[in-house]
Amino acid sequence: MALAFSEKAEVHFKDLVSRYPNTLAALLPALHLAQSEFGWISVEVMDYVARRLELHPTKVLTVATFYSMYNMQPVGKCHVQVCTTLTCALRGGYEILEHLEEVLGVRVGETSADGNYTLSEVECLASCGTAPMFQATFSDGEIEYFENLSAERVDTILADLNKRIATLPNPAEMH
Amino acid sequence: MEERFLSRNFDIPNAHTLAVFEKHGGYQALKRAVTMDGDSIINEVKKSNLRGRGGAGFPCGIKWSFLPKESDVPKYLVINADEGEPGTFKDRYLMELDPHRHIEGCIIAAWALGIRYGYIFVRGEMQHAIRRLEAAVKEAYAKGYLGKNILGKGFDFDLYVHPGGGAYICGEETGLIEGLEGKSGQPRMKPPFPAVVGLFQAPTIVNNVETISAIPFIIEHGGEWFAAMGVEKNGGPKLYGVSGPIKRPGVYEARSGITVRELLEEYGGGMLDGHELKAFIPGGSSCAVLTPDKLDAVMGFETMREAGSSLGTGCVTFMDTNTCMVRVAARLAAFYHHESCGQCTPCREGTGWATKVLDAIEAGRGRPEDLDLLLDMCSNIEGNTICALGDSIAIPVRSYIQVFRSEFDAHIKQGCCPYPAWTKKRLRSSVAA
Ligand SMILES: Cc1cc2nc3c(=O)[nH]c(=O)nc-3n(C[C@H](O)[C@H](O)[C@H](O)COP(=O)(O)O)c2cc1C
Ligand code: SF4
Ligand code: FES
Image (cartoon, rainbow over all chains, first blue to last red):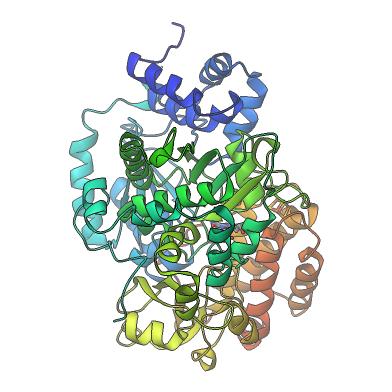
């Protein structure tokens, strides 16, 4: 089936394009929109975005792979990204990562077998004053920071996240 | 506590909404600014000694005066809200808690400089800040502070919020402009500077979030008042961050010219119990590391240079005596390697090589000649790259080796790291690709 933005996304897309003197400048926000619509940035999605912005698909590929927020492979419904840069490391960021590996049963870079969680390391997210922290990115495009973490707090947060992602689509099946 | 300005609205419930912002005096500075001409505003900003808050500390008024007055194409204002320098976390608060103040600053800048369009480039991960800014922009349009014929002055200004894609290098102003144009964030050669050839090839002013959030106060109280809230050449109140193993990490407002000791003890509450200070970085990971004997250094651009480092973003990271300085250097090198855009060979290759050598020393596989090798690498990177990211790894790595040489030697001699590890397991020690 050919890809197409939902009605709501279409409105958002038109608004985005109207903000710039050319269509190329809308590429970064358009890729964010496409990722929340289609789950991840496949070749098909890049072709679609290229067509909609009247750009060459290789331009879209170059840009999508330069930045860290665009998933070139499907991830879990919730992508847990733990900051391990200096301040977080000083306040237990690596221990949080290790704890998450145990609780989620995955290693860094992996997705759980049920497709619910992907665990990654990420660089400083400007939460150093509330370190350690992780960022959760959901398959509906929502992003949330969880700060001042401890192993116990991570367990409570995960219990909430489990409920929250129950109704979310699996990015691998979104297109 | 001193009187607060930049952070004055942080504790007021719903100060991010237009109604509450206006109730507390919001947009009064704009109303005043439109009774002044552009040159008088630039003059006040010059008198204020407001230095860029993004890290480089360029005097804001002087930067503004570089923007050509006449231009055949529309001029742009670009706000650097990419806040990615490790250890830095102040702009986020301004955007999330007081977005209208920032927007007011943008409109005043546009009025003073004859700018037609503005973009706030916010790092894509900061969704909360993006939503707050977008909602505030919408309210400002509805109230006639943005759009056509602002305050009946025949002045048009459109402002948009633009999300980044996730890349530290988009914090560098020309990398940011490339990113905003929809390209990979690879910095441009300077000159030409953005004031002459910037966004969409047009004259462009790039300023940090905090720099622009300070503008309404300069209009309200005057440039001289602002300058008086600081030390020589460093004007105004400023946001500082304190982080690491201390009692009250966070963002605090104080005058320019406070000492590091005051920040740590009076604001940060001192080190956590049982932790002793070993080292600190004054303003983000690109700054050289300093030892406790420099605690009385004043937080100004010149004074921090005299102390052997730089003020950077003014967000200080403290480290305790349990911290292995080799590991810190290795972790920071890995960060810069990961974030190098890859255009310049010394930066692309040097950051990777330095990471490998530092990782090897940390793992107990270092050789005595490695330290000279690293220092040599630093000299070969520094000054030989398109943007300052190259310097941002050379300067700190050299400083860790110079200031904590005995620690590096101990790793090499003993063949292991004498400090407690960051984890029980052996996770990847770095995120280097
Ligand atoms: C590698 C690198 C990263 C930077 N990151 C940021 C950043 O995240 N935020 C910022 O405001 N300035 C950053 N800067 C500084 C900008 O290039 C530029 O000096 C600043 O946006 C100018 O604004 P100001 O004069 O108001 O400080 C960075 C510079 C370099 C070399
Ligand atoms: S110094 Fe590094 S980050 Fe800067 S342009 Fe060169 S390769 Fe890119
Ligand atoms: S070091 Fe983790 S948020 Fe800055």
